[in-house]
Length: 95
Image (cartoon, helix red, strand yellow):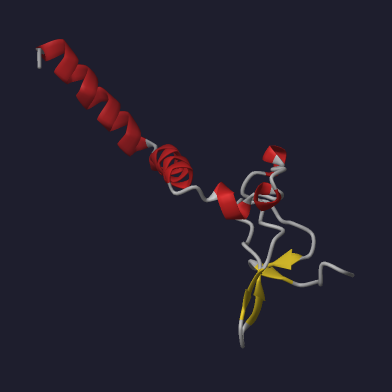
């Protein structure tokens, strides 16, 4: 690697370490994409009509586990969602 390119790489690394939130957010977005988190955590995705304006805001299809109940994929965003608190559904979908 030539000297100017090496300097540019080091400069980029320094910038990322100065702003770890940016690096963390980029890494999180990358991981959410490759692990297909939106497949369960985006409303409508499992019904074939995903609402991309609410990506990762929590799934609307529950998974029934015998003896444990029905579990809904929680909201993975920082925004609050009506009917949810601390990642748990507080109201029935039928209310």
